[in-house]
Image (cartoon, rainbow, N blue to C red; front, top):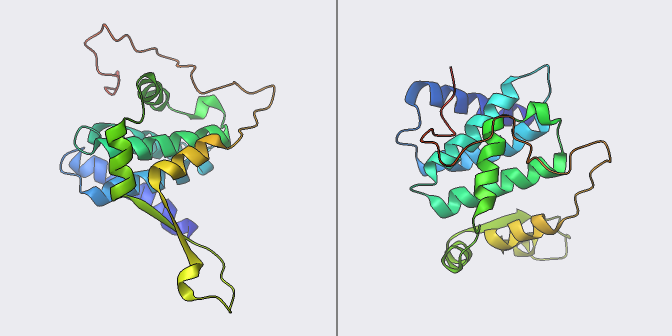
Length: 187
């Protein structure tokens, strides 16, 4: 399973290199979410690949949010919550990732339309351990994506006194008055 998740991250890097951000199928949105969450657990200074994968997943979802706004926003929020929970060394989190999450949090994350659409259209199923005496259908439970993210958001996040309180410290702040896109890498 871990190797499959590692390979998914490599596929995202390869896909971006070959195709850019054009014509991504909806399945790639799910790959971005899964690989982004997985990359958070792999962040370390000796393997910069995982910082690049995290960045490409977040930036990819950010770009695709123009067409797939509700789903991308939910996936971005999921990656952000996992990142906050894992509390990695801030130097391992690319500044573009921090900036996108800052922008995401500046506005209202969930509108009434978003909530009703996600509740109706997107359900997360979880396989649970089942007793041999119970029916096979009781081995699964389901929850709306918005409820699941709210539950994750309500989890307590224990930060040590030495770590920053949030990932809001941006190395290169984005000036909204500038015409420069925060996603364009300075060369």
